[in-house]
Amino acid sequence: MPGSVLITGAAGGIGRATALLLARRGWHCVLVDADAAALDRLQAEWPQQARAPLALVADLTDAARIAALGPQLPPLDALINNAGMSAGGAEVLAGVEDGAAQRLLALNLEAPARMVQACAPQLRAGARIVNVASGAGLRAIPWRGLYSASKAGVIAQTQALARARPDWSVSALSPGFVRTELVQRLIASQRLDLPQVLARIPLARMAEPEDMAEALAFLVSPGARPCAGQLLVLDGGSSVYGGSQPLPPTQLTALAFDTPRALQAASIDCAEWQAALAQLPSAAAGYPAVIDGRALQAPAGGLLAAVLEAARAFRARHARQASLTLLLPPPPAAVDWQLAGDAAAARMALSTLAAEWGAAGLRINALAPACAPADCVALLDYMSGARAQFLTGQVLMPALP
Image (cartoon, rainbow, N blue to C red; front, side, top):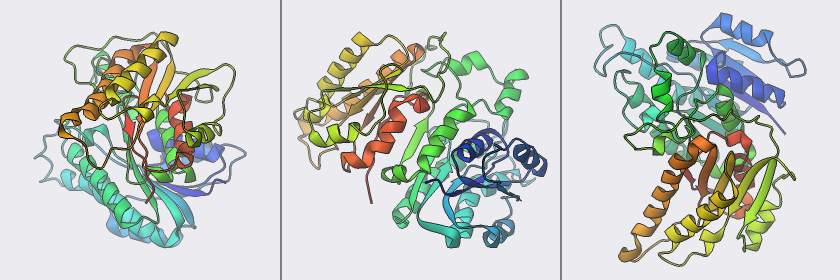
């Protein structure tokens, strides 16, 4: 059953889309934003059948204001630290004199930790905490001030909190380019070159806020517990693309997130995986989703060959808008040095396929769990279907604490 969730930066972009989605799904939302007028606009379009939200105006660069939020909060099942700011045009060393750099760090890096501390007395057992990071935290983005540094810090902070509090489920989401109000204004003013951006995204489109909302809705669900300590990179494959040539454009439009999934299990010989996949909803027609398990039986040094075989079989049957999810064995504790390159080669082949297939709307991801198949049902439900149609080129390694 849905519970209660606090969302920071709730009044615009990803936060707004997430709040509306969770409200439609029965969550009680606590909305926190510094923009009182934007919060009023969000409440004016609140779903009629949804429970009325609790809206709190707060500047999260102010540590005292964050601390004061605690007594105002109801019991919480989830916390989404989404609020953040950029510093377009600024060099890394800029912003010290006028305080801009400190405000950015206060909101992007310090506020998530302070929110956890403020909410801790109200967080129920097993609460889910999700920090919204950025692809900028995985690679340096120049002339955005300390934005990349702050987001790299959030990713590390997420992983450390997950280790320190295994009783919670702490994860992070790393979006790529998302068509928020701010990004749309940059495109309209020609400060952002849209064709240049799309030429580095294998799926050849920019994400919509709703793509991120679907991911956050999964990460705050109880089924996301095996993702504790994990970073979900949702960027259309841009983080795995390293080519110097522009990627091909696409003529495809995004599918509706509620498009039924037509599930096909391929080479699944394990009874536990068969039982887990039987729990996934499937339709006779819809978004083709293949879950392939042949790599689970791969001999030592044979993972790359199994991945390529699965990819060939998938590509022979699907020309556009379909997903392939590979089931991989967990990394062995020890491996002969002569075979040590096989797993790395397999992962890079998967990333390369994601880049080559993206314009056709074909996605490829892998799951290498260190937990039971039954614990991965919710994750597979999300990643194989249309709700995750901006997820490609990723190898997820879920585990239970």
